[in-house]
Amino acid sequence: MPGTGGARHPLSGGVGAAIRDRFPIFEHTTYANSCSQGALSTDVRQAYEAYLEGWDAHGAEWEHWVERAEAARAAFARLVGVDADEVAVTTSVSQAVSSLVSALPLERGRGKIVISEFEFPTVGQIAHAQELRGAEVVHVRPDADGRIPLERFAEAIDDETALVCCTAVSYRTGYRLDVGEVARLAHERGALCLADSYQAAGAVPLDVGALDVDFLTAGTVKYLLASAGLAFMVVRRGLHDRLLPTQTGWFADEDIFRMDISDYSPASDARRFDAGTPPVPNIYAGLAGMAIVEEAGVAAIETHVGGLRDRLLAGLDELGATVATPRGEGEIGPLVCVVSTDPNALVAALAAERIVTSTRDANLRISLHLYNVVEDVDRILDALARNRALLA
Ligand SMILES: Cc1ncc(COP(=O)(O)O)c(C=O)c1O
Image (cartoon, helix red, strand yellow):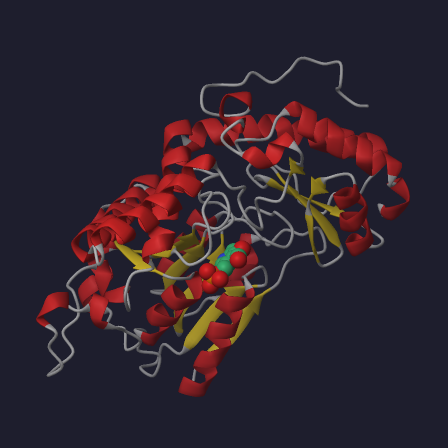
């Protein structure tokens, strides 16, 4: 086994062994599927219980529940380095992106939407839905090595481009795109840039100011360690009064509690991209999940996971496996994709050994997070060695 006898990666506070006992699944399972769903913590379980207890004890706690939604907005804002008034709270990335494109005046000579081939289906499908409004959608495809060179974006973006959609970490291959450079190319042509960062938030430091993207989306299901039904979209301050979403709802109104149906007067900040009643139970869970990430620190998580990932890659090389994820500096994050001759059979074989992974395309997806430790990596490598015939 490669590296088994080597030095252990140092575990800093809040990651690895220091945090693992807050995730009961590790008592019986090697969990390496955070790209699909973060593991359940005792903190998130208690948060759900607190929601139910408050509801039971006080009935409709609306003031408190709305305050919790604002706390979630602020927590996500801290995570990505913006102010809370630059964050919309939504139930999904789909809802966020739909409201964003509903605000784009596509008909005014800026009818093109450029999307990378690595976009999550929802982003691609929403872009293509705009064809009904006259939009043209241009795909930016990767090279055979799995990278998307910036020149491909430069070729696709022109003066008619309204929006460029890119993804910080590909859910399909784990490839990390240089979204800051994509944003720069978009801005050179007067286009706006959306970075869907669902596969990065909580695992990779995200500084919206440094990236200079106009919009950034993520949700709590994966590396933010909570459950379905809560997502966020950053909308940079300078854009608020330029963008009027026609996909909207009463929680996006300038005065929610006026209950006024005489006109459309959205909030002056990013809350204009909110919609209906906030997803209160998911907000309780999301706050608890994001608190764990904040406590550990995303930089510490990235360092910890980077050490585990390098050990995994060394072991995969020793097995002669084909890694689909490009491995250059800054090109790989927490998700490692390995080519399999039968990915479903491989996931099932690992599951039979209580190792949880997932598949996309022809790849086995192994994703590591703050709670994984060296022993998890070695268990996965041992199991892959036993199933070597299923690796391409
Ligand atoms: C990159 C990416 N974007 C978006 C989503 C999900 O979007 P939604 O919140 O609309 O379900 C996922 C995963 O489910 C994802 O991996």
